[in-house]
Length: 283
Image (tube, rainbow, N blue to C red; front, side, top):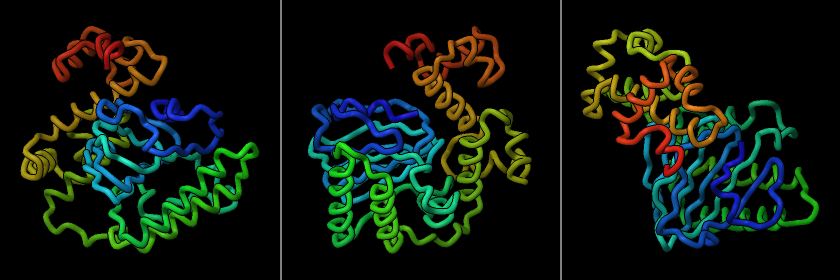
């Protein structure tokens, strides 16, 4: 699924596997917002000026320029803030664009495409200049009448290789505080397995810890219970399905948590303050 919230920013036809635009072209940055959604494309958001707030799964990140935010495919994301002075680029692309390379090459070679990686990379001044040149070249290629797939792929790969040497892409030492490490693993497990497992016992078994230990780690790390995070993930997934799928509320209730429509609607309102129908209409 394409990131449809960004498509109106440009009037020309969208390439099947690749899209790029300048953040500068957004007319109303003050009220800019992208509701929770999940897509099958990778994307990145390069901010050369200003600030923004975007999420990856249950984690929210403040992006301070100059920086770049990577989102691997199949993750839920939400964009909640963009400063009025923001400048930069947004790009999404299908991994099949890179059929010149072995399958899975991006994930294997670049840490920022891995499911559990930190999506935010702070940039050095020299890197920022280099990346801007590459991104401007990509805009030219994108707007050309004839899309040259291999050139687009190679320019993107050059950008990724430039980022490989950034200090913030170096894998950090493992956090020795087990409560933070377990909480991090739990959040990623929720994002990946929410349709398969919906009890704390299931996730504790998946993480090879006891339910009590899992809850203790989460409570110590972030002041919430493991059940709180499970509910947050269910609501995040529900919002995505309500706004970006053709399923009705009854179908979502069964697909997501095997509940009756009335029980699901009650749960949704308890957690958000509005009904699923109100969210579908007003966001």
